[in-house]
Amino acid sequence: MNDNQLKTVGAVAGYILAGGKNTRMEGQKKLFLRYGGETFCQRIVKACDCLPAVYLSVDQKEPYKEAGLPMVEDRWKEIGPIGGIASGLWDCKEEALLVIACDMPMIDAGLVGKILECYRKEPSSILVTAQSGRIHPLFGIYPKRILPCMTEQIQAGDYRMMHLLKRAGYRIMELETESHAMENVNTKEAYRGLTGSAMQNAAAPNPQMVISPQKKSPFVFAVSGYKNTGKTTMITRLVPELTKRGYKVAVIKHDGHDFESDVPGTDSYRHQKAGAYGTAVFSKNRFLITKECQGITEEDLFAAFPEADIILIEGLKNSSYPKYVCNYPQEPLISAEKLADELETLKKQI
Image (cartoon, rainbow, N blue to C red; front, side, top):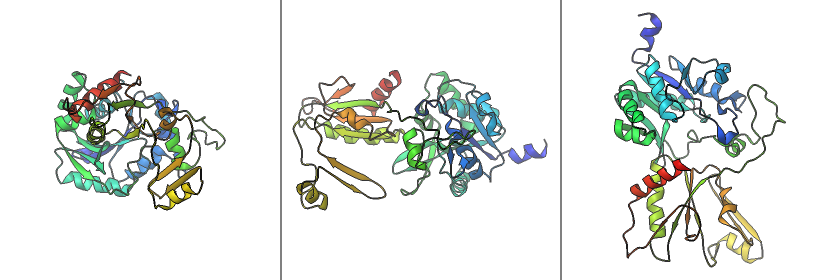
């Protein structure tokens, strides 16, 4: 065994998931987007400087040669992250891989050091990160010992990362709520929000190259029913279940009549009553906009949530969206776990 092999036995290597078809980016490779004068790839490699090696997980090697990293090509094609991670555990010498999605350019060396320190306390199980109750399976450490469990799950046709965590066993490293490290830059809108400009290709950093905005098509699911039949209760149970499974969820409530858009006594309420057709309140963490507008539909609001994986609508029982109709108390509400399973099945079919 040579010196390099000795260095990697029992070690943790970096493993960047290059992403699949990048459809949300119109085929543009997220790995080569630029931020702070560097590509996302360069930033992640720099964060992993303490590791003995950094590999790149790819569906095919040719488009990623310019990254200059050793590549692991997917053994299981087009099945998502689980295939890429399993391929890495199969091919790499190291005993564990620190998996990092390529669209997480805010990962830094301090966070890498922190997760390594946490992992070494109990290196037999998967270690993933979580923030505000949401688990992030694509920034975590996966040991080689789970490979049999992974391949068995893949052969069964189940490619969901959350199912893998439950099958193989995992621990969580909780991140501070204020941290931006877990923010995924996986849409043109998110990239524009990060940089204040349109996407630029690393190979041709031309500030005038603008990719036209394109509205993301979200997966929309309605929770409907008559008044006081459990719609809000169902949604407040479903949101944390979907969030736990790794989805970013937005909720839109339809009011069939009209509603008071602000709280009496607040400054923005007074602005509105003074005649402002629109008001806005914001902080560094959130904003709220109220605007008088005729003929608005739920579809007009989808663009406000470009990062959402799933948009839940409360109401619209006569719409064509896939839906669950509440009929409480005549019928008990379905469990959030079962409804989330059915929703995931529908999402995969669309």
